[in-house]
Figure 1 (cartoon, rainbow, N blue to C red):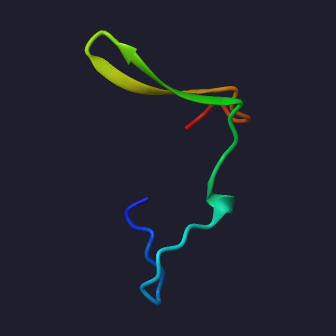
Figure 2: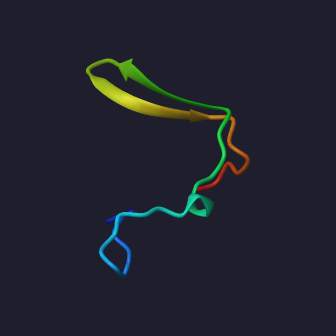
Length: 45
């Protein structure tokens, strides 16, 4: 997603663009913070 702006200049987002996950968490691995997405319905990107 590059912008939330619609054709009228308002910030909107259609929830149908989102997927599904049982859990989303931010975890620290070594010196990096990563977003872990677990339990998705689709396993491919």
